[in-house]
Amino acid sequence: MNKTQTIEQLKTLQAQGCQIANVICDITGTGEEIPCYPKESFLVYLTDEPDNEDCIIGMNHWAVCDSIRDFRKSVIFGLSAARKAYCNYYVSKVYCVKEFKSDFI
Image 1 (cartoon, rainbow, N blue to C red):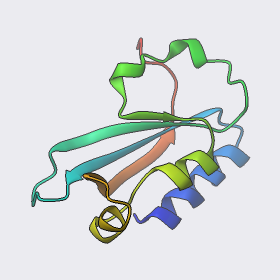
Image 2 (image 1 turned 60 degrees about the vertical axis):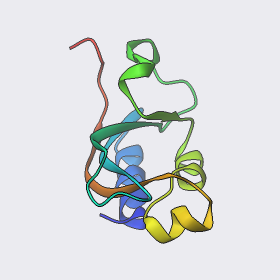
Image 3 (image 1 turned 135 degrees about the horizontal axis):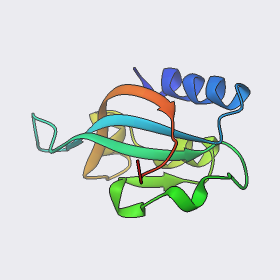
Image 4 (image 1 turned 90 degrees about the vertical axis):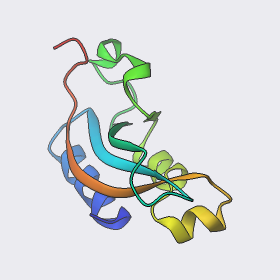
């Protein structure tokens, strides 16, 4: 999945009433061939004040984005975008976008 497809998935979950989404992806370093952080997690808030916000353990996730807009602006997809942004890490592959329930399950 590319960035546009991932954002469309986030919007679909938001329309279905999901409050927090979990994006599972590989994070790769700019000088690496193999992902250095496989199957990492980004949380994306789909509402201003989600009910299950207290179920998040922040260190279990690569980042927590405040909104879809924050995700779009902050998360770098692909090597060329990482080089343009002078960033050392980028999302190389997205596995799934799903509803986040809790880190305590």
